[in-house]
Image (cartoon, rainbow, N blue to C red; front, side, top):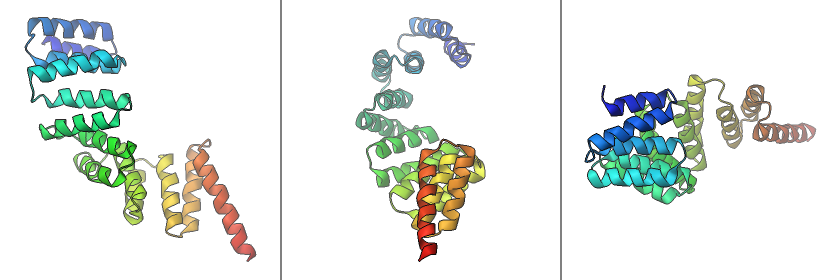
Length: 223
């Protein structure tokens, strides 16, 4: 087993010092190989040592300008630092270099979402769902961007798909409730606010939505 694979195994076992040793040895043995630097960057990202992680990813990209995962790593570092514009640039570059993985498209979508560019986020979330249709986190963010882009009918379908995968997704229940309110279906909205609160009793948004809906229905019944 090579040093990089051993280092990755140690990372997965949360034996980070041993992982660092293997990655260091891999770099010393093959200083022109970008993989050692990329994996050490991943380790540094995992330990929130962002400044050093950037240096390792940049070194990897200097050694191999086509190393898509180096740019993906940089995108993750900048995202963690809330520098969403730089994160966006690096995720886009990683995809352009051929990184056709759901996580790359998902993270790119999140960078647009964080910058309130919800419509720009949509095609990337959609592509991520195509590459990984059973990930409820990806589907949920896709649904959220649809709702924020006022594509309510499609958002309802996507939130429903989330609940097919994970019936205990309280945020999907809450947002489905909001979507049904927009569609003027108060009974369905009420049901999903209640479901969200059953799953997560401290869900403040669902509690607020349920309260306002109860007040609205009471007022309507009095009229």
